[in-house]
Amino acid sequence: MLQGNSRILVVDDDASVRDMLSIVLKRAGYDVVCAESGESALNTLKKESFELVISDIKMPGVSGIELLKKIKSIDAELPVIMITAFASANDAVEAMKLGAADYITKPFNIDELKLIIERSLYRKSIEKENIELKSRLTEKEKFENIVGHNHKMLKIFDLIATISQTDSTVLVSGESGTGKELIARAIHNKSGRAGKEFISINCGALPENLLESELFGHIKGAFTDAYKDKIGLFEVSHKGTLFLDEIGEMSQKMQVKLLRAIQERKIRRVGGNDEIEIDVRIISATNKDLMEEMKKNEFRSDLFYRLNVISIRIPPLRERKDDIPLLVQYFLKTFNKRFNKNIEGFEKEALDAFYNYSWPGNIREVENFVERAVALEKNRYIGLNSLPTELIYNIAEQDVSAGDLDSLLIDGNFDFNRYIDDISKKVIVKALELNNFNMKNAAKMLKIQYRAFRYNIEKFNLKIKP
Image 1 (cartoon, helix red, strand yellow):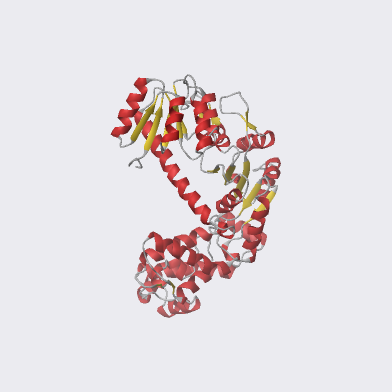
Image 2 (cartoon, rainbow, N blue to C red):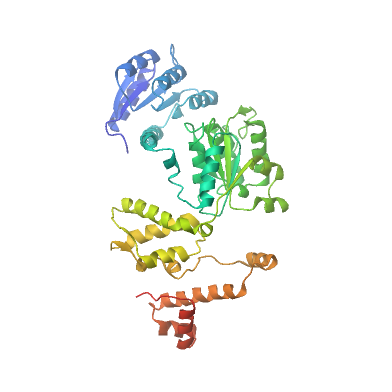
């Protein structure tokens, strides 16, 4: 709840609406000032400051749309919520394109309006913090959330700086957890579109019909739950950047519609006939091999070549292990601050465990492990006891499925001895955990001789937790 002493200017030519909003918002804790016209509102804004404006769209004299334009020319950061008695999608779309924070139609639900107000004020506070942070960042520090000095990452940083000055579509590929969205945000933040929206959507997280509605919007009555017009993400990100994550999960039908939008720079809302022009930069990401998906007819080649004008492959962490010390220190600083701790660093054995691990979850897994370690550690330096078992014993929490095994065998990448050793190590460590690291009891559980158990402990260089 952000109301506190937040000041709101209510603009409406209907006295009953002004009075009702004034009473309701004052009860909610806001400081409310009312104006009966656009002209009066502009005069008030010249004399006083406000955190938010609520304005009717249809007013005699200076209309709500004209008022919105003038407010944005004076203070582009001041959120304006538009109210209209006419459920006109065109008015709402025009207002949103001109910078309105949101809109609501009469007769409106008071609780819904309060929620919109809170959301708009919260967004303004976050944007203010971001502006202050950006003003303190040097060009070099703008990559600070993408940590790395490995030569592969330095090449990516150079590539980002170059392609940010173009509007070409970009395809970012890499395993889960490598930071594909961070790369997309960096491209946006260094481009001429930086002042506009960066919108992200996971194409694999929604069923086809919902994804279509999210991307293109819909008109009222287009389907059962379409109670009002909805603006799609293409329109919301107009003049900005739209990031399509997990693009390889998109259905064939949606691929066709996306291809059309990219080619024609126009969209149609679900259930609508009007074509809406869009100016959006597309950055997509995938953890799949789209070339292989094309061979299997799972991904359209014409869409692939539209998306893959510029390609960025993010290397997995196992290919840039020299970045691990940087990453663990970066996350240590982050979680020290979050948990109000002052841990100074890592013991050598703990750092060795980080370095020797295979990191199937990449950067995201490093973040999770460091967060756990900082939360548990009571000493000045993080030791092995604060690390998860799979990290100490270098056990990647991933299994090879039958399909993966087929592929490994056919491709000639299968190492039988390593595969069996990995399984053996995982079973031994799990038995130790279940027996509180008592080796004799663990050996009994596995029905093997204690001497054989000890041999495997030494073979895999496993250090028994105290």
